[in-house]
Image (tube, one colour):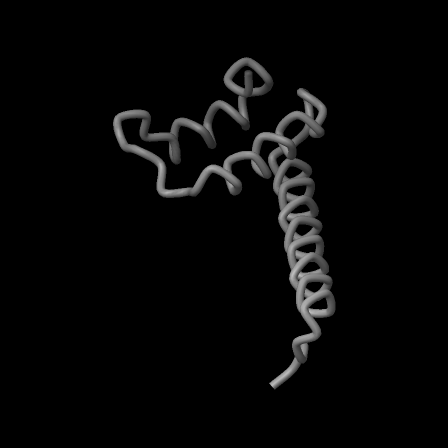
Length: 81
């Protein structure tokens, strides 16, 4: 998918991609990365891809914190120390 997009992207992938190694990210993180990749235009620069990925990571973090706060409120537990 990314390999054919641009020379800069191919160069970056050749420097960081080691297909013989297994990934260390859990499935939910992989899903966030996949959504970010799908949401990014195919001809986007590496900087744009990084910005979109960071946006989705922050969005996921905010949603996770909101969900945890909602659970704490539901079970009438204090949200802070």
